[in-house]
Image (cartoon, rainbow, N blue to C red; front, side, top):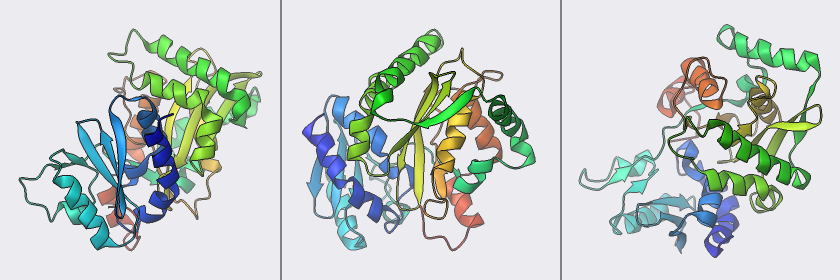
Length: 302
């Protein structure tokens, strides 16, 4: 692990505390993504400035994470980063809208969010199919959800490798292959560095067939960052793991879950995470702007 990953991990609790006050987008501070990239990606580094932590993706882009609730101090840090000449990703709307059109201020990924409490039960007609299939696994009793710990690291790493192997022919690139393996194989250390991070595994007759890793984003939101599973195992075991992850989160504390977009294209009839997210996006998921209109008065997001 690099000194830059350690510096980010040290700042993580303060970033979580400040994000909502700065109206940052939900996916602004994905600790699992950033920690793994800072540990493995060539040229990635962090820079502390007054009131903020700058995360540099080599020479490609920069994002500014708040270490203060003072908006003027945070704005000054963003303006300092703008002078570097790199594209800035995930700039809060209240800053981005005030910038001249000639300044390169971009978003990184679209934000897709839904309410934690809804995902705990998956109630509703439009999620009936998913709910019934997961309930079938519950009734069969052959699958058991467990908290991922140090004792699962080796098996979880092997599961992640298997997931990529099963899809290698269909994948144009092995997206975040090294980073995902690193997270699963070093999960105990990652959890110790990122307060609130947790993992859920699904055992089928004692064998790990699905695993996902989650972490807080802000004081009101969290993310299921990555999940891997064995496609030869029980269907919907990965969705079962997702539901169990949602049930471990107190919706009164972190009411919003952000899965982010699916990295792979949706392929109808294929039981994978992309298909699952596609269904959620079609029925339950909205952009933050729409959510803000629906839940007027909430102080979260951007």
